[in-house]
Length: 32
Image 1: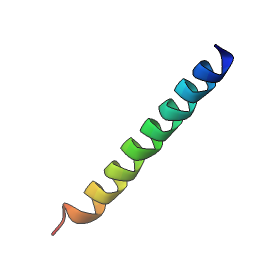
Image 2 (image 1 turned 90 degrees about the horizontal axis):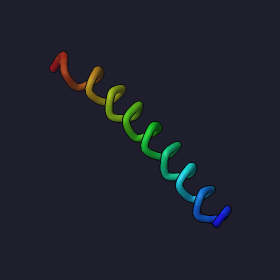
Image 3 (image 1 turned 30 degrees about the horizontal axis):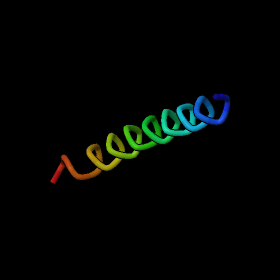
């Protein structure tokens, strides 16, 4: 079960990184 938990944490980190990435892209694209 520990591996499943680690995978869950990994996806959580990826989700946070993806949200941050989208916010950066949005802030760059929105002025145009």
